[in-house]
Amino acid sequence: MGIQPYEGPYAVTAFFTTDNGGKGAQWVSDPELQRANSVLNSALSLDDRKKAFADFQKRFFEVVPAIKLGDLGRYQATRGNVQGFAPGRIPRMWDVWFE
Image (tube, helix red, strand yellow):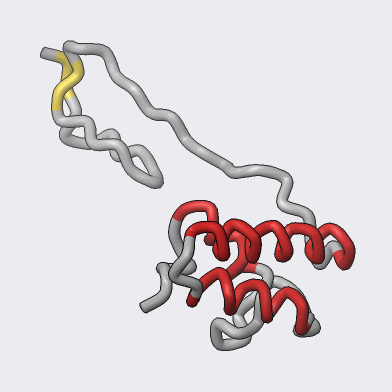
């Protein structure tokens, strides 16, 4: 059984390969990226996965299919006297009150 490719540091490989149903960000499949991704998701040894990730990263920088500029996060906070607030993708402001 391989590791889950869509969580943790391996998520970037799934984004830039096309062996996940053709839903990668690149337009043309790259055999070296595909091979490294396959090893990354099937190797049982942590050292083999680390090498596969290093191989993936090296090839990625050679072909540069895309550049990830960062992650977009949203911080939401309230004061202690605010009640009923629930953080979400879009802040909900109804049924929120000061206590």
